[in-house]
Length: 429
Image (tube, rainbow, N blue to C red; front, top):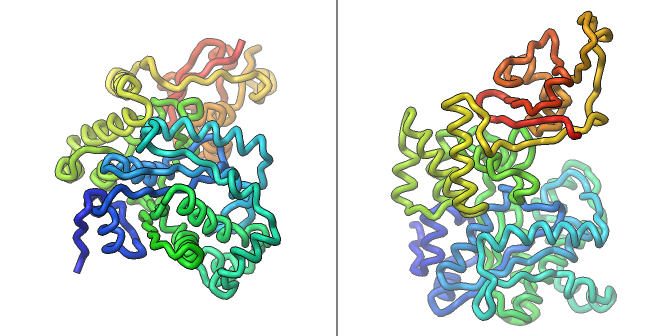
């Protein structure tokens, strides 16, 4: 029989589909009813921006705060120096201190859109380098390492899968789960944190932290995970043909972000409305059940709601206006992503080399499409051209002559990858 939570936070988590696993659902529910709970999610600083794959857990923190509890966003300034090996086939590239600091600065911009960091009962933003950088190795091994069984650590799926494939797991990476467990202990000691949340791939790390905290401090703490998301057609959530869907506006324009959600597969609309918006569940179900052309308006609502949360209502309205201009009227709109291309980044050929019999200069279209983020690789762009899905000013590029005149790029041109993705490009002065 399904457990029916009494606390508002867990009820929302269950109704909206956020809940995958919990170490003790009833005890956590009782704790949430008894008073304000402090909970955290950790984010290693492996890039300058968070991406859509992080958004599900950010929404969990937002709901936690909206229901009267205190979220902690824990920046992994310390753990990033080690790298999480969970479900990876190889070791993460090691970043230096300056790269980690730069990445943390970029990531922090996003959280302020979703959480209130006001003094008092507001959210807290912490960095685990504060305690991990100060650890003395021998003392840490003696005081903390003795609580970890190597046999048990090897049994966790995130480690076992790497070893089963006979892929190397460095001693550095093997320490990651101990350091993450220690984070929970420190957050419990310093801030009374009693709940760690994360994706299902973090279950082993979360359980380690709970076990360590209970054994060292005798405190009852909890873990809660969200499902790992794929789209209904099996793709990893947060990836598109143009690359990762970043949350920072300087890495992905609000229009491109809006368009990602507008292009949601019909079968995912209702589910994504529950995850990524604050619309009532009944309304999410109603919109998700629409058929035919009506589902497209539900996708516009999804795109507007999600973009408003991240970039503001004005950016969402501008993105919708541009989309309608591009799709309904065949124009360019005012909000399409614009790229300035450097001549040295393009392979420029003369017409004579291409046997066109003229003095014009041309560049390979596949290169331009990659630079405009309309294709991940030159190979992807070539495939797009072969399928006649690559267009310049709404005219398809012919596979027999996959080039663009340099003279055309000296004025702004509109590139299209299929019917849904567009960009404006011009050569830099």
